[in-house]
Amino acid sequence: MNWVPLVVVCGLTLTVCGIIFRYLRRRDADSPVIKINLRPTVHIASFDGWASLELHLVNPSGLRVWIEEAKLVLTDLDANFQTGLATGQTVHKIKQAVLPNEILSMSITGSLYDATGRPQGPYSFVVLGTVHYRIGEDWAEANIHPHRIEMTALSVIRLRRIRRKKTTAEPCANQTKEMATVKTSGR
Image (cartoon, rainbow, N blue to C red; front, side):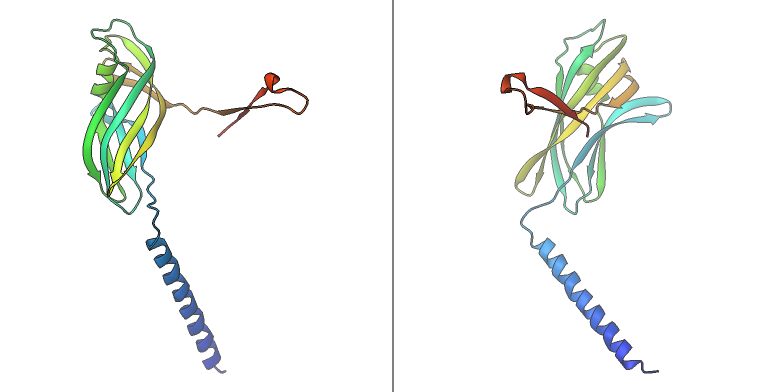
């Protein structure tokens, strides 16, 4: 059996694959667009029976990201017996770097409790917001999806992410623009 043609074909195939691989890596490295997918999420963390709300900032990219602040807005507040003025918003100063493929977690329970006016009984609200961050000299922001939160004082009872459907208004073929129908499409 003649092994020489088989070895030559395998060697040429490996060489071509190596050249293509190097080309694709260089093309992605020279790309002027920085691809960052910072993902802020709200989670419940429990420690020795105590539950608190945490903001998780996930950095799946290969670059270090500087997190400046998180602006949280509270809506649909349902609370009784408040001991302070409910501001309905809070700014959480972070000023910390998140390394590549790392997660930064911080408690937001106290700041949300203050923003709701320090209620003494059970209360609920919807929280959403933005996280402002920087990569090099470029500033960007990431949205925090809305979450329905139920609490009693500083204790978290329930956390649910609100998933909204997108709505668009389009006129039907036999209708005028004044009689537009609303179509709903899920995520």
